[in-house]
Image (cartoon, rainbow, N blue to C red; front, side, top):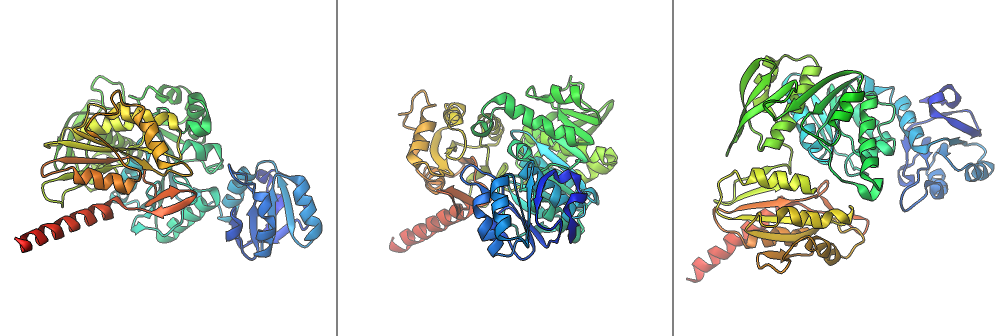
Length: 506
Protein backbone atom coordinates (compact mmCIF):
# COMPACT_ATOMS: atom_id res chain seq x y z
CA UNK A 1 0.00 0.00 0.00
CA UNK A 2 1.04 3.64 -0.48
CA UNK A 3 1.11 5.52 2.79
CA UNK A 4 1.57 9.21 3.50
CA UNK A 5 2.64 9.00 7.13
CA UNK A 6 1.72 12.50 8.24
CA UNK A 7 -1.94 11.83 7.36
CA UNK A 8 -2.18 9.52 10.37
CA UNK A 9 -2.01 11.39 13.66
CA UNK A 10 -2.47 8.16 15.62
CA UNK A 11 1.09 7.15 14.66
CA UNK A 12 2.41 9.94 16.93
CA UNK A 13 5.42 10.73 14.73
CA UNK A 14 7.74 13.26 16.35
CA UNK A 15 10.28 13.69 13.55
CA UNK A 16 10.75 12.48 9.99
CA UNK A 17 13.83 12.22 7.81
CA UNK A 18 13.44 11.39 4.13
CA UNK A 19 10.34 11.01 1.97
CA UNK A 20 6.96 11.71 3.64
CA UNK A 21 5.39 8.76 1.78
CA UNK A 22 6.39 5.25 0.79
CA UNK A 23 4.93 2.15 -0.80
CA UNK A 24 5.05 -0.61 1.84
CA UNK A 25 4.54 -4.35 1.43
CA UNK A 26 4.95 -5.64 4.99
CA UNK A 27 5.68 -4.70 8.60
CA UNK A 28 8.41 -6.26 10.74
CA UNK A 29 9.79 -5.87 14.26
CA UNK A 30 12.42 -8.59 13.64
CA UNK A 31 15.15 -7.57 11.18
CA UNK A 32 15.45 -11.19 10.00
CA UNK A 33 11.93 -10.90 8.61
CA UNK A 34 12.40 -7.55 6.90
CA UNK A 35 11.99 -7.56 3.12
CA UNK A 36 11.66 -5.29 0.08
CA UNK A 37 9.58 -2.18 0.83
CA UNK A 38 8.97 -3.24 4.42
CA UNK A 39 8.59 -1.11 7.53
CA UNK A 40 11.03 -2.09 10.28
CA UNK A 41 10.04 -0.98 13.78
CA UNK A 42 12.85 -0.83 16.35
CA UNK A 43 11.46 -2.13 19.63
CA UNK A 44 13.33 -2.55 22.87
CA UNK A 45 13.39 -5.85 24.75
CA UNK A 46 14.97 -7.34 27.85
CA UNK A 47 18.07 -8.44 25.94
CA UNK A 48 18.29 -6.17 22.89
CA UNK A 49 17.57 -2.78 21.35
CA UNK A 50 15.94 -2.91 17.91
CA UNK A 51 17.99 0.09 16.73
CA UNK A 52 21.08 -2.16 16.64
CA UNK A 53 19.48 -4.11 13.78
CA UNK A 54 18.77 -1.15 11.50
CA UNK A 55 21.59 -1.99 9.11
CA UNK A 56 20.41 -5.60 8.69
CA UNK A 57 16.83 -4.46 8.01
CA UNK A 58 18.05 -1.94 5.40
CA UNK A 59 20.20 -4.60 3.73
CA UNK A 60 17.07 -6.77 3.40
CA UNK A 61 15.16 -3.99 1.64
CA UNK A 62 13.32 -2.08 4.37
CA UNK A 63 12.08 1.27 3.06
CA UNK A 64 10.81 2.73 6.33
CA UNK A 65 12.66 2.57 9.65
CA UNK A 66 10.87 3.66 12.82
CA UNK A 67 11.99 3.92 16.41
CA UNK A 68 12.33 6.13 19.46
CA UNK A 69 16.04 7.07 19.31
CA UNK A 70 16.26 10.29 17.26
CA UNK A 71 20.07 10.47 17.24
CA UNK A 72 20.52 6.99 15.74
CA UNK A 73 17.73 7.45 13.21
CA UNK A 74 19.10 10.82 12.05
CA UNK A 75 22.58 9.34 11.67
CA UNK A 76 21.25 6.53 9.47
CA UNK A 77 19.13 8.97 7.45
CA UNK A 78 22.31 10.72 6.30
CA UNK A 79 23.70 7.40 5.04
CA UNK A 80 20.45 6.36 3.35
CA UNK A 81 18.66 9.56 2.19
CA UNK A 82 16.37 7.62 -0.15
CA UNK A 83 14.70 5.86 2.81
CA UNK A 84 12.21 7.18 5.34
CA UNK A 85 13.17 7.36 9.02
CA UNK A 86 10.54 8.08 11.67
CA UNK A 87 10.98 8.94 15.32
CA UNK A 88 7.83 7.99 17.17
CA UNK A 89 6.69 8.58 20.71
CA UNK A 90 6.20 4.87 21.50
CA UNK A 91 7.50 2.22 19.10
CA UNK A 92 5.09 -0.45 20.29
CA UNK A 93 2.05 1.82 20.00
CA UNK A 94 3.31 2.85 16.54
CA UNK A 95 3.56 -0.83 15.51
CA UNK A 96 -0.02 -1.46 16.68
CA UNK A 97 -1.50 1.57 14.92
CA UNK A 98 0.46 1.02 11.70
CA UNK A 99 -0.70 -2.62 11.65
CA UNK A 100 -4.31 -1.45 11.93
CA UNK A 101 -3.82 0.95 9.00
CA UNK A 102 -1.93 -1.58 6.87
CA UNK A 103 -4.60 -4.28 7.29
CA UNK A 104 -7.50 -1.91 6.59
CA UNK A 105 -8.90 -2.00 10.15
CA UNK A 106 -9.65 -5.71 9.66
CA UNK A 107 -10.37 -6.14 13.39
CA UNK A 108 -13.55 -4.09 12.92
CA UNK A 109 -14.81 -6.45 10.20
CA UNK A 110 -14.90 -9.48 12.51
CA UNK A 111 -16.08 -9.97 16.09
CA UNK A 112 -13.22 -9.73 18.60
CA UNK A 113 -13.39 -11.41 22.01
CA UNK A 114 -10.52 -10.69 24.41
CA UNK A 115 -9.99 -12.96 27.41
CA UNK A 116 -7.91 -12.04 30.42
CA UNK A 117 -7.32 -13.70 33.78
CA UNK A 118 -4.60 -15.60 35.61
CA UNK A 119 -6.12 -19.00 34.87
CA UNK A 120 -8.58 -20.28 32.29
CA UNK A 121 -7.78 -18.04 29.30
CA UNK A 122 -6.89 -20.92 26.97
CA UNK A 123 -9.96 -22.92 27.96
CA UNK A 124 -12.33 -19.97 27.57
CA UNK A 125 -10.86 -19.17 24.14
CA UNK A 126 -11.51 -22.76 23.06
CA UNK A 127 -15.05 -22.74 24.48
CA UNK A 128 -15.92 -19.41 22.81
CA UNK A 129 -14.42 -20.56 19.49
CA UNK A 130 -16.26 -23.89 19.43
CA UNK A 131 -19.56 -22.59 20.84
CA UNK A 132 -19.76 -19.70 18.40
CA UNK A 133 -18.82 -21.98 15.49
CA UNK A 134 -21.57 -24.39 16.56
CA UNK A 135 -23.98 -21.43 16.62
CA UNK A 136 -23.18 -20.62 12.99
CA UNK A 137 -20.47 -17.97 13.49
CA UNK A 138 -17.24 -19.59 12.18
CA UNK A 139 -14.59 -18.62 14.71
CA UNK A 140 -10.87 -18.81 15.29
CA UNK A 141 -8.76 -18.61 18.44
CA UNK A 142 -5.35 -17.17 19.30
CA UNK A 143 -3.29 -18.01 22.37
CA UNK A 144 -1.11 -20.48 24.20
CA UNK A 145 -2.32 -23.40 22.07
CA UNK A 146 -1.39 -21.55 18.86
CA UNK A 147 -3.61 -20.16 16.13
CA UNK A 148 -6.71 -22.16 15.22
CA UNK A 149 -9.29 -21.29 12.58
CA UNK A 150 -12.79 -22.79 12.56
CA UNK A 151 -11.40 -25.44 10.19
CA UNK A 152 -8.31 -26.35 12.24
CA UNK A 153 -4.72 -25.27 13.05
CA UNK A 154 -3.13 -22.38 11.15
CA UNK A 155 0.60 -22.54 10.47
CA UNK A 156 2.08 -19.63 12.36
CA UNK A 157 5.36 -19.18 14.23
CA UNK A 158 4.51 -17.35 17.44
CA UNK A 159 7.12 -14.94 18.76
CA UNK A 160 5.39 -14.77 22.15
CA UNK A 161 3.82 -17.51 24.31
CA UNK A 162 0.27 -16.11 24.44
CA UNK A 163 -0.67 -12.88 22.66
CA UNK A 164 1.15 -12.19 19.35
CA UNK A 165 2.90 -8.92 18.62
CA UNK A 166 0.56 -6.36 17.02
CA UNK A 167 1.67 -6.82 13.39
CA UNK A 168 1.29 -10.60 13.70
CA UNK A 169 -2.07 -10.22 15.44
CA UNK A 170 -3.66 -8.14 12.68
CA UNK A 171 -2.19 -10.44 10.02
CA UNK A 172 -3.95 -13.34 11.81
CA UNK A 173 -7.24 -11.41 11.84
CA UNK A 174 -6.83 -10.89 8.07
CA UNK A 175 -6.11 -14.60 7.59
CA UNK A 176 -9.21 -15.55 9.60
CA UNK A 177 -11.35 -13.23 7.44
CA UNK A 178 -9.97 -14.77 4.24
CA UNK A 179 -10.89 -18.23 5.55
CA UNK A 180 -14.44 -17.09 6.25
CA UNK A 181 -14.11 -16.83 10.03
CA UNK A 182 -16.26 -14.11 11.54
CA UNK A 183 -14.93 -14.07 15.11
CA UNK A 184 -11.55 -14.20 16.84
CA UNK A 185 -11.38 -15.35 20.47
CA UNK A 186 -7.99 -14.43 21.86
CA UNK A 187 -6.07 -14.65 25.08
CA UNK A 188 -4.91 -11.19 26.16
CA UNK A 189 -2.09 -11.42 28.67
CA UNK A 190 -1.22 -8.64 31.11
CA UNK A 191 2.24 -8.38 29.53
CA UNK A 192 0.66 -7.98 26.07
CA UNK A 193 -1.55 -5.17 27.36
CA UNK A 194 1.42 -3.31 28.85
CA UNK A 195 3.40 -3.84 25.64
CA UNK A 196 0.61 -2.31 23.51
CA UNK A 197 0.08 -5.45 21.40
CA UNK A 198 -3.70 -4.93 21.45
CA UNK A 199 -3.60 -1.12 21.33
CA UNK A 200 -6.26 0.41 19.10
CA UNK A 201 -8.63 -2.58 19.25
CA UNK A 202 -12.11 -1.94 20.63
CA UNK A 203 -13.10 -5.48 21.59
CA UNK A 204 -16.69 -6.55 21.03
CA UNK A 205 -16.51 -8.56 24.27
CA UNK A 206 -13.90 -8.66 27.06
CA UNK A 207 -13.98 -11.64 29.45
CA UNK A 208 -12.57 -11.79 32.98
CA UNK A 209 -11.92 -15.21 34.52
CA UNK A 210 -10.02 -14.68 37.80
CA UNK A 211 -6.99 -13.03 39.36
CA UNK A 212 -4.17 -14.37 41.52
CA UNK A 213 -0.44 -13.46 41.62
CA UNK A 214 1.41 -14.19 38.36
CA UNK A 215 3.98 -12.57 36.04
CA UNK A 216 5.50 -10.66 38.95
CA UNK A 217 8.89 -11.03 37.27
CA UNK A 218 7.51 -8.48 34.78
CA UNK A 219 5.01 -6.38 36.75
CA UNK A 220 6.99 -6.36 40.04
CA UNK A 221 3.85 -5.93 42.19
CA UNK A 222 0.44 -7.60 42.30
CA UNK A 223 -1.26 -4.18 42.04
CA UNK A 224 0.61 -3.42 38.80
CA UNK A 225 -0.49 -6.81 37.47
CA UNK A 226 -4.10 -6.11 38.36
CA UNK A 227 -4.08 -2.62 36.83
CA UNK A 228 -2.69 -4.06 33.57
CA UNK A 229 -5.58 -6.54 33.42
CA UNK A 230 -8.15 -3.82 34.07
CA UNK A 231 -6.97 -1.86 31.02
CA UNK A 232 -8.57 -4.46 28.71
CA UNK A 233 -12.04 -3.39 29.89
CA UNK A 234 -11.36 0.21 28.93
CA UNK A 235 -11.15 -0.88 25.31
CA UNK A 236 -14.24 -3.11 25.16
CA UNK A 237 -17.90 -2.59 24.24
CA UNK A 238 -19.26 -5.41 26.41
CA UNK A 239 -17.91 -7.29 29.43
CA UNK A 240 -18.28 -10.75 30.98
CA UNK A 241 -17.24 -10.94 34.64
CA UNK A 242 -16.73 -13.82 37.08
CA UNK A 243 -18.69 -12.65 40.13
CA UNK A 244 -17.01 -15.33 42.29
CA UNK A 245 -13.55 -13.85 41.78
CA UNK A 246 -12.44 -11.57 44.58
CA UNK A 247 -9.33 -10.48 42.67
CA UNK A 248 -10.83 -7.81 40.43
CA UNK A 249 -14.41 -8.67 39.49
CA UNK A 250 -15.83 -5.87 41.66
CA UNK A 251 -13.37 -3.37 40.15
CA UNK A 252 -14.61 -4.11 36.63
CA UNK A 253 -18.28 -3.91 37.64
CA UNK A 254 -17.67 -0.58 39.38
CA UNK A 255 -15.97 1.13 36.43
CA UNK A 256 -17.28 -0.54 33.27
CA UNK A 257 -19.57 1.67 31.20
CA UNK A 258 -20.88 -0.77 28.58
CA UNK A 259 -23.21 -3.78 28.60
CA UNK A 260 -22.14 -6.30 31.28
CA UNK A 261 -23.07 -9.90 32.15
CA UNK A 262 -21.88 -11.76 35.25
CA UNK A 263 -21.57 -15.49 36.00
CA UNK A 264 -21.18 -17.58 39.15
CA UNK A 265 -21.09 -21.11 40.58
CA UNK A 266 -22.85 -19.99 43.77
CA UNK A 267 -26.59 -20.66 44.15
CA UNK A 268 -27.28 -17.50 46.13
CA UNK A 269 -25.23 -15.26 43.85
CA UNK A 270 -26.77 -12.24 42.14
CA UNK A 271 -25.05 -13.19 38.88
CA UNK A 272 -26.92 -13.10 35.58
CA UNK A 273 -25.90 -16.68 34.71
CA UNK A 274 -25.37 -19.39 37.35
CA UNK A 275 -24.54 -23.10 37.50
CA UNK A 276 -25.31 -25.45 40.39
CA UNK A 277 -25.83 -29.16 41.13
CA UNK A 278 -22.65 -29.98 39.20
CA UNK A 279 -22.11 -33.70 38.55
CA UNK A 280 -18.87 -35.09 37.08
CA UNK A 281 -18.81 -38.39 35.18
CA UNK A 282 -16.24 -40.19 33.04
CA UNK A 283 -17.81 -38.54 29.97
CA UNK A 284 -18.07 -34.94 31.16
CA UNK A 285 -20.19 -32.79 33.44
CA UNK A 286 -23.88 -32.08 33.91
CA UNK A 287 -25.27 -29.09 35.81
CA UNK A 288 -28.30 -26.90 36.36
CA UNK A 289 -28.07 -23.64 34.40
CA UNK A 290 -30.05 -20.72 35.85
CA UNK A 291 -30.90 -17.41 34.21
CA UNK A 292 -33.14 -15.39 36.47
CA UNK A 293 -36.14 -17.58 37.28
CA UNK A 294 -35.49 -19.98 34.40
CA UNK A 295 -33.65 -23.24 34.94
CA UNK A 296 -32.20 -25.77 32.47
CA UNK A 297 -30.40 -29.12 32.82
CA UNK A 298 -27.22 -29.08 30.75
CA UNK A 299 -24.86 -31.93 29.80
CA UNK A 300 -21.46 -31.04 28.38
CA UNK A 301 -18.22 -32.83 27.45
CA UNK A 302 -16.16 -30.59 29.78
CA UNK A 303 -14.62 -31.73 33.07
CA UNK A 304 -14.39 -29.93 36.41
CA UNK A 305 -16.31 -27.23 38.25
CA UNK A 306 -13.84 -24.52 37.25
CA UNK A 307 -14.37 -25.47 33.62
CA UNK A 308 -18.13 -25.11 34.13
CA UNK A 309 -17.34 -21.54 35.22
CA UNK A 310 -15.25 -21.09 32.07
CA UNK A 311 -18.16 -22.43 30.03
CA UNK A 312 -20.51 -19.91 31.65
CA UNK A 313 -18.28 -17.12 30.38
CA UNK A 314 -18.66 -18.48 26.83
CA UNK A 315 -22.46 -18.67 27.31
CA UNK A 316 -22.48 -15.01 28.41
CA UNK A 317 -20.44 -14.11 25.32
CA UNK A 318 -22.97 -15.79 23.03
CA UNK A 319 -25.78 -13.95 24.82
CA UNK A 320 -23.94 -10.64 24.31
CA UNK A 321 -23.74 -11.42 20.59
CA UNK A 322 -27.49 -11.94 20.29
CA UNK A 323 -28.12 -15.67 20.69
CA UNK A 324 -31.02 -17.03 22.73
CA UNK A 325 -30.50 -19.43 25.60
CA UNK A 326 -32.36 -22.11 23.64
CA UNK A 327 -29.92 -21.82 20.74
CA UNK A 328 -26.97 -21.87 23.13
CA UNK A 329 -28.10 -24.98 25.05
CA UNK A 330 -28.62 -26.85 21.80
CA UNK A 331 -25.03 -26.04 20.78
CA UNK A 332 -23.34 -26.82 24.15
CA UNK A 333 -22.74 -30.56 23.49
CA UNK A 334 -20.48 -29.51 20.59
CA UNK A 335 -18.19 -27.41 22.79
CA UNK A 336 -14.57 -28.59 22.46
CA UNK A 337 -12.00 -28.90 25.24
CA UNK A 338 -8.62 -27.38 24.37
CA UNK A 339 -5.57 -29.58 24.09
CA UNK A 340 -3.71 -29.80 27.39
CA UNK A 341 -6.56 -28.57 29.61
CA UNK A 342 -8.05 -31.40 31.71
CA UNK A 343 -7.36 -33.57 28.69
CA UNK A 344 -8.18 -37.17 29.66
CA UNK A 345 -6.24 -39.87 27.78
CA UNK A 346 -8.08 -43.18 28.03
CA UNK A 347 -6.29 -45.33 25.46
CA UNK A 348 -3.56 -46.70 27.73
CA UNK A 349 -5.14 -49.68 29.46
CA UNK A 350 -6.89 -49.01 32.75
CA UNK A 351 -4.61 -46.11 33.64
CA UNK A 352 -6.24 -42.70 33.45
CA UNK A 353 -3.82 -39.98 32.32
CA UNK A 354 -4.77 -36.29 32.50
CA UNK A 355 -2.73 -33.54 30.88
CA UNK A 356 -3.47 -30.12 32.31
CA UNK A 357 -1.01 -27.28 32.07
CA UNK A 358 -2.03 -25.72 35.39
CA UNK A 359 1.01 -23.58 36.22
CA UNK A 360 -0.11 -21.47 39.18
CA UNK A 361 -0.76 -22.62 42.78
CA UNK A 362 -4.45 -21.62 42.52
CA UNK A 363 -4.94 -23.54 39.27
CA UNK A 364 -3.12 -26.59 40.67
CA UNK A 365 -5.33 -26.69 43.77
CA UNK A 366 -8.48 -26.48 41.65
CA UNK A 367 -7.20 -29.19 39.31
CA UNK A 368 -6.38 -31.58 42.16
CA UNK A 369 -9.83 -31.06 43.68
CA UNK A 370 -11.57 -31.92 40.40
CA UNK A 371 -9.27 -34.79 39.41
CA UNK A 372 -9.90 -36.55 42.71
CA UNK A 373 -13.59 -36.82 41.80
CA UNK A 374 -12.70 -39.37 39.10
CA UNK A 375 -12.44 -43.02 40.22
CA UNK A 376 -8.82 -44.11 40.76
CA UNK A 377 -6.56 -46.31 42.89
CA UNK A 378 -3.53 -44.06 43.43
CA UNK A 379 -2.98 -40.43 42.41
CA UNK A 380 0.38 -39.60 40.84
CA UNK A 381 1.10 -35.91 40.17
CA UNK A 382 3.93 -34.24 38.29
CA UNK A 383 4.56 -30.58 39.12
CA UNK A 384 7.26 -28.30 37.74
CA UNK A 385 9.10 -25.08 38.33
CA UNK A 386 9.06 -22.77 35.30
CA UNK A 387 12.50 -21.29 34.77
CA UNK A 388 11.27 -18.31 32.73
CA UNK A 389 8.72 -17.24 35.36
CA UNK A 390 9.09 -15.71 38.83
CA UNK A 391 10.79 -18.15 41.18
CA UNK A 392 8.69 -17.01 44.17
CA UNK A 393 5.85 -19.13 42.79
CA UNK A 394 7.89 -22.34 42.61
CA UNK A 395 7.73 -23.42 46.29
CA UNK A 396 4.02 -22.58 46.33
CA UNK A 397 3.45 -25.33 43.73
CA UNK A 398 4.94 -27.82 46.21
CA UNK A 399 2.74 -26.47 49.01
CA UNK A 400 -0.34 -26.90 46.80
CA UNK A 401 0.34 -30.61 46.12
CA UNK A 402 1.82 -31.74 49.45
CA UNK A 403 -0.33 -34.44 51.12
CA UNK A 404 -2.69 -34.39 48.13
CA UNK A 405 -1.14 -37.25 46.10
CA UNK A 406 0.28 -40.71 46.63
CA UNK A 407 3.33 -39.92 44.51
CA UNK A 408 4.78 -36.54 43.48
CA UNK A 409 7.32 -35.94 40.73
CA UNK A 410 9.07 -32.57 40.75
CA UNK A 411 10.51 -31.48 37.41
CA UNK A 412 11.22 -28.44 35.21
CA UNK A 413 9.48 -26.55 32.42
CA UNK A 414 11.36 -24.03 30.30
CA UNK A 415 14.59 -23.81 32.31
CA UNK A 416 15.66 -20.90 30.12
CA UNK A 417 19.19 -19.96 31.13
CA UNK A 418 18.89 -21.53 34.59
CA UNK A 419 20.38 -24.82 35.74
CA UNK A 420 17.40 -27.26 35.81
CA UNK A 421 18.45 -28.60 39.20
CA UNK A 422 18.37 -25.04 40.56
CA UNK A 423 14.73 -24.79 39.44
CA UNK A 424 13.90 -28.15 41.04
CA UNK A 425 15.57 -26.92 44.23
CA UNK A 426 13.34 -23.83 44.36
CA UNK A 427 10.24 -26.04 44.10
CA UNK A 428 11.50 -28.45 46.78
CA UNK A 429 11.77 -25.59 49.30
CA UNK A 430 7.98 -25.58 49.50
CA UNK A 431 7.66 -29.09 50.96
CA UNK A 432 7.54 -29.34 54.75
CA UNK A 433 9.26 -32.74 54.36
CA UNK A 434 11.29 -32.64 51.11
CA UNK A 435 12.90 -35.99 51.95
CA UNK A 436 9.57 -37.86 51.93
CA UNK A 437 9.86 -41.18 50.13
CA UNK A 438 6.98 -40.39 47.75
CA UNK A 439 8.71 -37.36 46.18
CA UNK A 440 10.93 -37.88 43.11
CA UNK A 441 13.03 -35.24 41.36
CA UNK A 442 13.77 -35.11 37.61
CA UNK A 443 15.75 -32.45 35.65
CA UNK A 444 13.60 -32.30 32.47
CA UNK A 445 9.91 -32.48 31.66
CA UNK A 446 10.57 -35.58 29.55
CA UNK A 447 12.22 -37.30 32.52
CA UNK A 448 9.35 -36.19 34.75
CA UNK A 449 6.68 -37.65 32.45
CA UNK A 450 8.57 -40.94 32.17
CA UNK A 451 9.04 -41.10 35.95
CA UNK A 452 5.31 -40.53 36.56
CA UNK A 453 4.42 -43.31 34.15
CA UNK A 454 7.10 -45.68 35.51
CA UNK A 455 5.76 -45.56 39.08
CA UNK A 456 2.15 -46.01 37.93
CA UNK A 457 0.05 -49.14 37.62
CA UNK A 458 -3.38 -50.14 36.31
CA UNK A 459 -6.27 -48.08 37.73
CA UNK A 460 -3.95 -45.26 38.80
CA UNK A 461 -4.66 -41.64 37.90
CA UNK A 462 -1.62 -39.79 36.51
CA UNK A 463 -1.81 -36.00 36.47
CA UNK A 464 0.78 -34.19 34.32
CA UNK A 465 0.68 -30.48 35.12
CA UNK A 466 2.38 -27.18 34.35
CA UNK A 467 3.42 -25.01 31.48
CA UNK A 468 4.55 -26.59 28.22
CA UNK A 469 4.13 -23.77 25.66
CA UNK A 470 3.26 -24.26 22.00
CA UNK A 471 4.77 -27.75 21.76
CA UNK A 472 8.22 -26.69 22.89
CA UNK A 473 10.52 -26.28 25.88
CA UNK A 474 12.49 -23.03 26.09
CA UNK A 475 16.12 -23.84 26.85
CA UNK A 476 18.84 -21.16 26.68
CA UNK A 477 16.77 -19.05 24.30
CA UNK A 478 15.97 -21.96 21.97
CA UNK A 479 12.58 -23.64 21.48
CA UNK A 480 13.16 -27.39 21.77
CA UNK A 481 10.23 -29.46 20.38
CA UNK A 482 8.34 -31.35 23.09
CA UNK A 483 5.18 -33.45 23.21
CA UNK A 484 3.87 -35.15 26.35
CA UNK A 485 1.64 -37.34 24.17
CA UNK A 486 4.54 -38.61 22.08
CA UNK A 487 6.50 -39.44 25.25
CA UNK A 488 3.47 -41.28 26.68
CA UNK A 489 2.99 -43.25 23.45
CA UNK A 490 6.70 -44.10 23.40
CA UNK A 491 6.56 -45.32 27.01
CA UNK A 492 3.64 -47.67 26.43
CA UNK A 493 5.05 -48.87 23.11
CA UNK A 494 8.28 -49.82 24.90
CA UNK A 495 6.28 -51.39 27.73
CA UNK A 496 4.37 -53.61 25.29
CA UNK A 497 7.58 -54.59 23.50
CA UNK A 498 9.17 -55.48 26.85
CA UNK A 499 6.17 -57.62 27.83
CA UNK A 500 6.23 -59.35 24.44
CA UNK A 501 9.94 -60.11 24.85
CA UNK A 502 9.30 -61.53 28.33
CA UNK A 503 6.56 -63.79 26.95
CA UNK A 504 8.82 -64.92 24.12
CA UNK A 505 11.72 -65.74 26.48
CA UNK A 506 9.38 -67.62 28.81
